[in-house]
Length: 530
Image 1 (cartoon, rainbow, N blue to C red):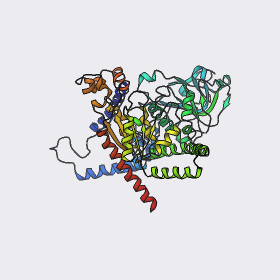
Image 2: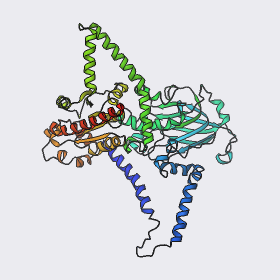
Image 3: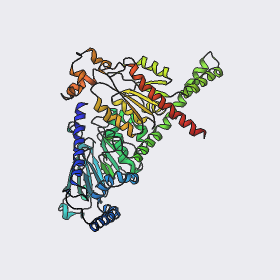
Image 4: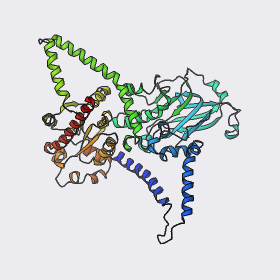
């Protein structure tokens, strides 16, 4: 975590450096450097104001003709309320001529290349080749008479953590080359596709839920939107379990079978290829979760559509199992049905809290007492213990129907993405995790429209309190321990720390979430009855 924190802080410093540079280099247009100097004449003021207004009128037309300026315009110089989804995802490679490769390497997060024309794969050599008309651009790239001459050669690692060298070193690299059309006779098409392809890697931090969404699902969603499901996904470092885990989401992004780049040795031919995933600084979890409201609504809507059919199936399965149990029971089905309906009706009036329970470190040691106090307050309580093999639809169903989610800081908190807006999220923050807890989950949860309640534990609530002297920096100054390096943070605060909640303190947070949830439920009932 500390290593990721350092990388992220450096990344933010890089971002802020640009912001500060802009702020310092653009002084107010109507204030002189020397405050004692006389203000400029009003006529000059009016001329300058007219020029600025005229520039804004012509700006969209001017930027449309220039892809580079269009990128700047859509990424920061247009009002958020009128920016379209396609504008947000604009790129210097939005307009690629036939038979060429365009690579946008301007982002610190990811590189992305676009190839348009006769595109063919060669997994054995980790190469994607674009064959173009021999007469195309010969004055730029050189003679095109030789069949195997390479006119353009690019290299790319299609993973969205470009600024973190340690993980990028583990990602497979692809070679992108352009050759003359005569060379194509040496590479026959085994599978001809009539839709574009998107190439990306599921390596790196895949296996960690936070990174699976932040560095995979969200960028893939962004990249594939304008294809309207008419796209083939080609995956490097392919994992069967990843496909199974996200099949509900993937089916809403593409209607074609997914290709394992290494495992499929056939030559696949495409009319266009996007290599890498688009990403924008505001459209990630660790940068406050998609800063534009339209993107949030669209993504949440997609998740609802992706999981609703499966959730209906789960409900049908449960109803069928319940009916079988009732038939086996000595109690008559009609009587038991009445009892269950009565209990369900009672529970439906209570706000529901889901506790995300950890199975290893950072567990809640007095979990049973927490459940009891939550029930005493008036909550309906459900405990989730997610495993890697747990079907996401089941987790989505539990959280999307809940009013409050409680959990100890860790990757599983990424499940807050499944919560309905206006729900409450209580994150328990162990020692040494303050910065990461707020950056990765606190700020994004607020952006998503959740009522975020952070609960920072006291040293006495940590299992480390029994291992160290009361004056030890591990308890009194966690920041100084984190500064010693990732190995210390991981060993001490992540792998060896559990939590025993002070339920008197925590009770206040539960009450706050309860009253908030009841107010929301009553408000919804009021609107339904009108």
